Length: 224
Image (tube, one colour):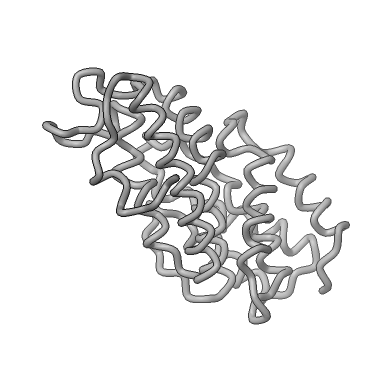
């Protein structure tokens, strides 16, 4: 099966009817993941599998505070199977797409074993970084009722990081470390550039609230 605009359009049509009204996990997110995936793919990649995985990986999207959050990618993989069959995917392509979907999730903790799975994982995580990552982080935090930051100690100099209550803490706990966990070299390079943008934002943020960004938050990145 050749990659085509028609196939992408059909996949978008399927997911457009099913995506929740979550601005951090909507159709635009899937479009961005596909753009990221193409940017870090190589000649070993089955682009038809990667296309489907990019658009079907969030078929089941559970809130970050849901106790079954770690099962969402497995549920998405299961629900993708009849869709893929209806689009004419072979058994091997269906299995490859399902594995990529299952393994993309941070909370599922499933090792990605194929090029497509590694690329999808990186592509999805790239969307948590940079300017769009900043917007998504605050959107999700707002939906969960989290405070932007601890006014008494914004950058946790004298307290334990608490990402469940403070949006900014999630940056230090997870987001600023994602570039080190990328599985593709291209993904790692893009992630580092996007992380540097986030650190520049944090420096401005710190200045505006009368604080100073600790060096422990910059990971040695040059930001200016």
